[in-house]
Amino acid sequence: MSAPQKVTADHQAEIAARVKAVEAIMIEKGLMTTEAVDRLAEIYENEVGPQLGAKVVAKAWTDPEFKERLLADASKACSELGIGGLQGEDMVAVEDTDDIHHVIVCTLCSCYPWPVLGLPPNWYKMPQYRAAMVRAPRRVLREEFGYDVPESVEIRVWDSSSELRYWVLPQRPAGTEGLSEEQLAALVTRDSMIGVGAPKAAA
Amino acid sequence: MSSPGPLVRDETELGEARRRVQDLVYGLPGGDGQASFREPWELRAFALAVAAHNAGQYEWSEFQLSLIASIQQWERDGAREGSEPWSYYEHWLTALETVLAGNGLLSEADLDERTRTVLATPRNANHHEAHREPVAIDPAVR
Image (tube, rainbow over all chains, first blue to last red; front, side, top):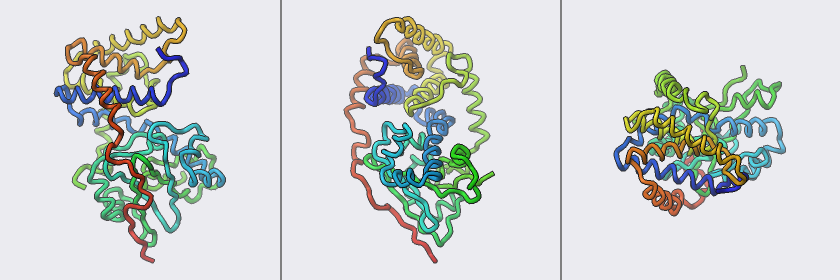
């Protein structure tokens, strides 16, 4: 029996491994399919976390010193807000500007800064997403995501690995000068932190 | 992309699926929406239990009773010092293991063995170097 305060990263890793083991055994025995589990998880994938990333983005939009710290060391800056955990150890936030737009992918697996962004959406884990985005980012953003990045803006695609996980600090939408941090956070979408969409416009 | 992208995803269908799952969990302790997910494994464990039930591996009432039993056990132990802290989805996982084992679909020994294997395998075993430059650039035309 562990002591009450011992809800450690180790413990989380152990139990996460146990869940994986249950799944592996069930799939092997043909008790159900991975697709069926994925479909169910997809219903809720938006609820594990992207609001945390939104909080970080809104703070960066309103607090230039925080933004500086975020861009220098995203993991450390996030931990100021109590955000961190498994797979969030080495995060890099890349900042969108008028001239450069960023998108994140993962080459070999689905490395993803989930303490900030929550669970990766299903399409992020598909090899097709990664391959197409690396080959023709501008076209994929326009055709698959309905997100038109002007020709005058360079697009950089960043490859996350288990050592370094990227996420995007989107640009603050125009006309949001009077909004509070909380109101701003509501404009930040998961897709805008992956780089496949813009934040919502001010209401 | 040949796979469905976010634009073609049917939000209505997702909403329908969600309502069906909500109906299922409504009668559970914590099933009234109080038990949100804090860790990815929690969502995975949640999805596993519902998927196994959907696939006809057990009656939902079996799972429900098992979950209640696990929580009651914890409450009884809770009076003692040094007992484990509250984690709804750990009870959920315990309930899933118990139901599967009770139906002869899983042995605890197999599961312990497999868990050790998972822990011994590094995450993304062949994916450990940091990539410090963009993997692709689409230049600006100005």
